[in-house]
Image (tube, rainbow over all chains, first blue to last red; front, side, top):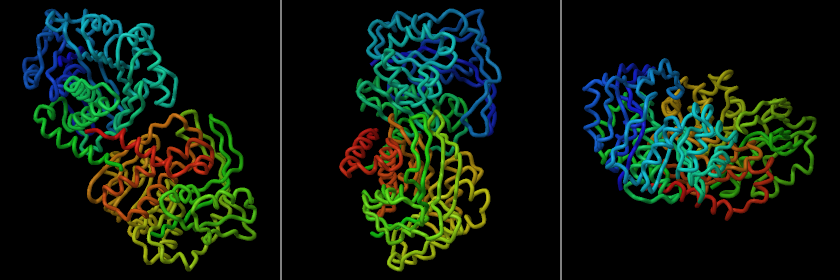
Length: 301
Length: 301
């Protein structure tokens, strides 16, 4: 069924122990959409500036992404992010951020997108997420991502948002920040009390935890040795998860675990090359093969 | 088949945000043996001092543990450890250690134990582990645990030990210390080059990683909310794993993953109460029920 993602599109410059990438395609929405498209067509709502280079647009066309909601805004500049990964390839420093078009008005949602059933509100200001949420009156499942900045500066709006969504995706450090509960299961349950019916707590190389109104589950990350660029790992995880859910419609705890496994596997490919390079040469059978390996690995009885 | 563990038996005093326990039974060998005994009878080699209180001996008799190798050494004092868990319930500080009998001669191995097939050399000086290893000429599977102290101070002896064992169990920080490889899969492969056919890297609340000559696997921890005392979590994990292996004889990668799942589940019970309290009122069907829940949780395709 119809899946939509709203979020950032940007130009990233990445420094890592494994190499550097200068002015490559990035942003939460494009990573999400590319990953989700292996399971379901995706509608994308996002804005770039008039400076957006034509060659960075090519990847948009390589996946099953509906681009009617992609705005190229005259007089504006594209979001830019420069970051550096530390030796452990998990921690990173932001060296510079230029919000540019992200600090302006939200991109308009095309009329044709109003019937979207599966909605992913990628990380942005929670006021913007609430405004976007209201434009999908027929939504069957709404999931949002957030970050430490909004937990610290916009808690009231974030609390409002939590009452209007079915699922929240966030990092373990953010779950602690939001709830002040050290135990991630306890933190997840506190978030459920704030509104959603499930919370996915992302732990990077340590996998992810699902706290659902019907129970709790944990999955490991795919044990990856070839980690070149972790940028977009969380967004591709979310994309695989939502793409899978849009394809199956199964939001039970068991359905969500399977969706998280899809996200885990597509994210494990994404980190093997810089930017979207690995997803661009990835085929669905490659994903299914690794998903089966992952399932075999987890056959514990 | 016959399983033996060599290691410490001690008197622990534990301070935690969840409460305190004063002078309770502890030590790697007793946690290991109690956990393993749910799958296989266990022989225990360890020493206590003449100060060892009679009421702390009771738990030894509550499990299927052969105590012929338990020495009560006249003129010696029992190993004592006092530790404090921090608010996150994962990190801990050692407040005091009295090695006492652990700093003396190794306990003798009874003649009747020489035919042991499954051998676990719990953490102690690697010279002692090598001496103990040599006393089990019919061993089918020898696994050792180690710690940061020996990696830093006794690397040559530890390197010798690695050539004489089939498996090594250690924490992720210790794997990094031993190999200087940040990626745990890479670290595990480097350790395989040093001798063992498999390495289990323990990550506490984040689960465990298996690097085996035939492949790699990762398992999450059981998502536990009721964490009262993490003492012995690693030892009960090792005990469950080895007890399961001794019962099945399957040391393939798939067999090891199932053994690690058994260890994961018994460890998840152990942390629910102080010392060995939870294991003392645990029955095998309780373990099997949770193991099935854990398996269901990991059904990803």
